[in-house]
Amino acid sequence: MVVQAALAALLTRLGAGEDIPIGTPVAGRTDGATENLVGFFVNTLVLRTDTSGNPTFRDLLEKTRRTDLAAYAHQDLPFERLVEALNPVRTLAHHPLFQVMLILSTADTDPDASLALPGLRVGVERSRLGAAKVDLAFALAETRDGKGRSTGLTGALDFRTDLFDRSTARSLVERFVRVLETVVTDPGVRLSHVPVLAGTERHRLLGEGAGPALEDLDATLPSCSRRRCCVRPTRRPWCRGRRRCPTPNSTPAPPVSPGCCGSRGCGRGRPWSC
Image 1 (tube, rainbow, N blue to C red):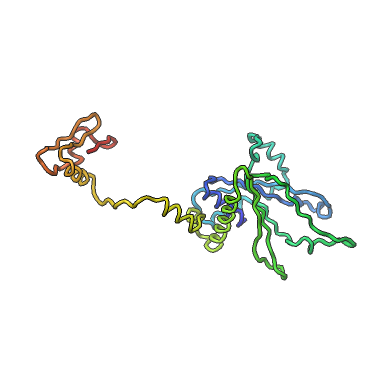
Image 2: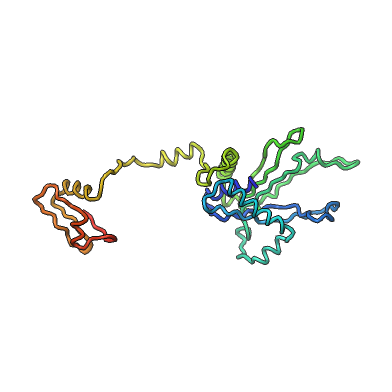
């Protein structure tokens, strides 16, 4: 749930919105009768994460926990039935209910050591489909030491090459790791303060992309008008409808005030200029 909440926070920070549906596979073996059966019972759940309100990560995690527990209570519902009931607009361009998938394996990451059959030598053959099922699929596995203690996570990202190139996918992984490191260190951080940019990216956006700094303006509107009239004393302020405010040309720095223009019809919601 921590990983899912962190992924939802990252997607929100990257502009995916505040309602983040993430697909995840479940074993589908809640019935005790399936314990001694060999077969594929995996089902797909859609976990919706609400990131609205700029919550702290701790609050987001608690909200995610409640939502996930409610979803797991109905994990026996076949995914096809869910799609049929919701009846979303079908398209071949993307998955009907989610475009991001999270696969988290907590089993032993060394299948050769965990699977033993009498009289047989067992090995693992890993294969690739060669095509992404969804836009982004994060596959994570928990690693353990010799005593069974968790030592971290390893993972891979599958992505659609017509939407992302390799450098973009790599940057997504780096941002994901950065978000995880931040929320683990400070669970009280709000989503708006979770960093998603590296130092070089921040410098490039705030430094190289910024123009010259403007001088701070510490003045009122009447003083700005007087200053402007000193530069061009022959010009008069005018209001909508070209009704000009009285400004004597003989005065080097005429007193221009909103009250002056107000007597000529200028007021709140009516633009005027000098």
